Length: 134
Image (cartoon, rainbow, N blue to C red):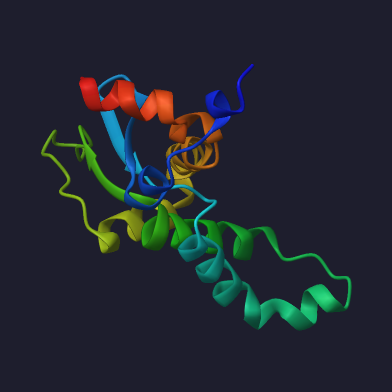
């Protein structure tokens, strides 16, 4: 295997790539490998440094909150095909994303989006080139 076959596209990681999360639901995701994501993660974890330093676990609720905020602030760049209960499209905004991802009822959606953002394959140069062709 060529090393270039494993290469990711840094621009796509930073700008985002549309990924069909479920049939009909496309979310444009940025990578969790970007400096912006890692800096935001460090900022959100900073208030918990004493807890972690004392060897105590971060409460699950706080972990969920941090994950939701990171998704809304740094990972999701847009979506298509997401609708409310009446079938009306939900326009993308960071505020709407935060509200959805903070709701425990939408944990599966949050987890699917995070998985796409955390998968190197999403940002491999070959995959990004194929997405651009379509």
